[in-house]
Image 1 (tube, rainbow, N blue to C red):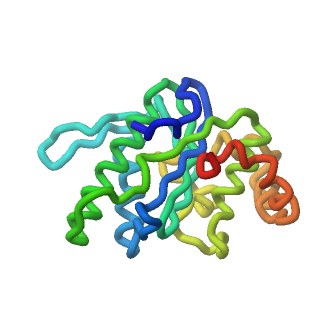
Image 2 (spheres, rainbow, N blue to C red):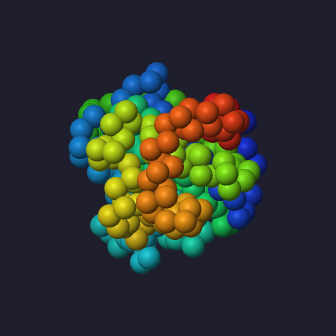
Image 3 (spheres, one colour):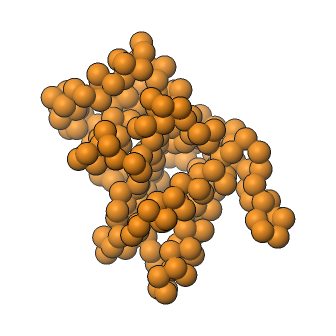
Length: 204
């Protein structure tokens, strides 16, 4: 569950910007394997078919209750854009991902204690224009965003895995090239930052 006063209204049929960073701004991804492990947790909970652990016990199957629209994993933080169909499903997804990843990370590096600064922050997105701009904010987080391998940007243009659902974003535009033009509009992006700051979880 999220930390106190971090989640802005946990309701169904809503879009959320979700954000978390490492405790003390430490790195939460140190190598390629770490990024891949985190992404595999999306697959675990959001694939079409339920996934089981090595003992045959199924993990929570959350597809249909919460959807991942876009994401970006940076060295010491991450951004997600989620759509929650059923209240509480986002919390269940984030609890599963962050608990599993923290256990993996601490075991791999011989650490203990909290990996993340807080459980996560989530801010409800109030309109389609904000949704468009926040998807751009997430995808443009890395300086080299067009070549960055640990975001959903390539999946938008080259085919998405089944656990990623870019359609709600793409359908806000006339075409994929129109979305590409939107991403490349740096002047418009800079102008939008002041307007969307209250919609961003990492600004709350």
